[in-house]
Image 1 (tube, rainbow, N blue to C red):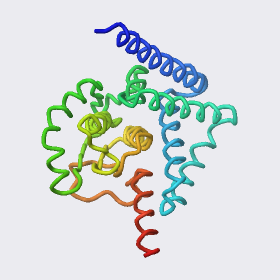
Image 2 (image 1 turned 90 degrees about the vertical axis):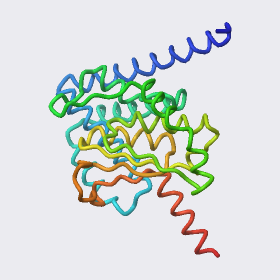
Image 3 (image 1 turned 135 degrees about the vertical axis):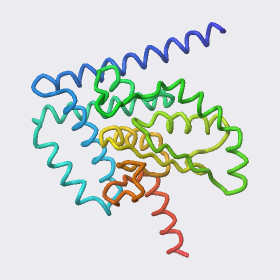
Length: 242
């Protein structure tokens, strides 16, 4: 490996460790007076509601109620810590979109739900799986104009994150040519996926529910990604203006 590549790789790993360390330092303070699992669930709930309510006005009232119920258990300083956690997450993805930042920290903290057999796939394996299936993506886009990628047990979203990055490597702009669908029975995991895909600017939605259930998730349990709603609104405004 060339020396400049070695330095770049080392810098990237150093940044990842720094962001993860900063995140854990802030998060651990929230665990001084409460269960860490509950603090994490509340963090992702508050963050997901904040993202959703910035653009999904159809679900604003319901998610605002969920947001208000959740924040009432925290002091002003603790809520400021929640904001800092989100800021660190944004910076981590901006610095390196090829990672499952939230899923990795969730696993390191030992918060995986063992009761439902929850195990998160490492990012490098998720990327290998995406690479092994990406051969026909460009051809499908040429035929239909887009492809859809569905993970019925998405967890923190690592498979979908990897797919987005592989699409870019295949010269496919995933914001224009890929629709992402994720679903998970665990609300907290689904919201982690929702946050990550939102930060990557993916189009699609994340649903909460059992994928083995033949009934479709209710609108309340479907969290449309911001880019999904933005594209729809722009199209509606364009059609209206013409």
